[in-house]
Image (cartoon, rainbow, N blue to C red; front, side, top):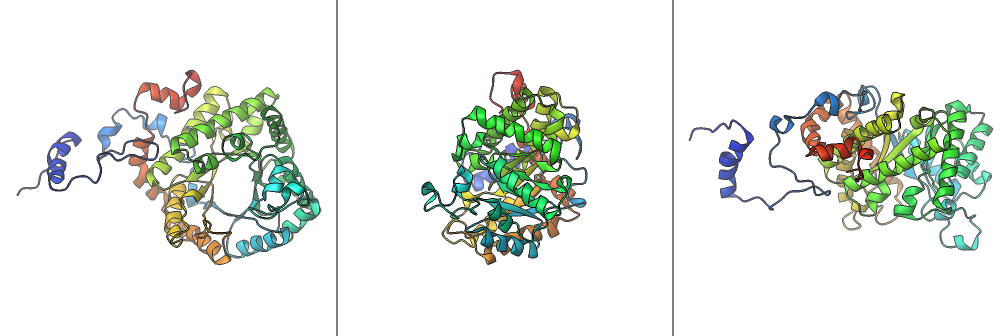
Length: 431
């Protein structure tokens, strides 16, 4: 039989694909992503007939930053390998941080226990049973000094997952850094400081929204004046996704909250370009590789348009969506935990192909307990192997994903395009 060559996708579906399906049916009637976006059986240049690559895609390091906020991305520097850790006492957590640094992690990420997150000392009656349980317990400057003992704060970046009490923990961190003799202009790191997602997904809020927003915008002002390399907030979709949202909903809630923070800061009298460059984001990386890569790229493009067209930002840095990624904890299983290594590796790959600035890879045993040192080392090695695999090749890897995730990102109508690129022009959801 002579080989058949189709002239277009329609002909392919009516000939080659139809013949194949007569022999073996598709496994299911429809293939969709977690966000109910249909996955077509074939993608080709025909799907991009009306696609304006200059407007909607652009080039790396240029508006709208779809392809990444850095022109060279990982060719010049890999992402920060930031493993999340913190448990029991400050002394025990400090030992874990030194261990992680000795194994090659390039940034610290501090987990605090619930009393610390809610503003209670370890000896408060309401703290009973929770001290050091899901993170490290910090009740004083002495505790923070113990936690950071021997760590060169002016040479490493530190992320602190803290929200309602972020201003207090940041002040303790600054106090320790000053005792070390560190220059404030050299301190780099992040406080999560995202209380709006606490009302949505986690619940560790203390004050009413309006008062919480005032504290957050005060921190914007303080850091802009005193800690220029510090990310004042990590606007988080991760917890919304872990609470059950889809990829689309994760981005929608995150950017909606981000808009609220920017508006609150402007209302407080801050110029958008004095603080917007210190905003950062935090996303989940889930199982559907192509959807996740597309999600990161779409979020960057949307945020660039929001900052330029809604808030009239002038500085390119104000339009850049820089983000940390953590692999999806909700996908880890207590049964056959070794399989979690594979899940985490694919999720990490999606984050890297999506252009993340820093990454935490979950340990295989986190569905069972706090991770052991061996599990933490495997999780870190996963990132290091990934970094070695794509080093110098990241542009080619991203190109392999280009067509698929461009089509997934691509709006299907002019009305949807308006919602994605300029959601404030209609009374409509972000997506």
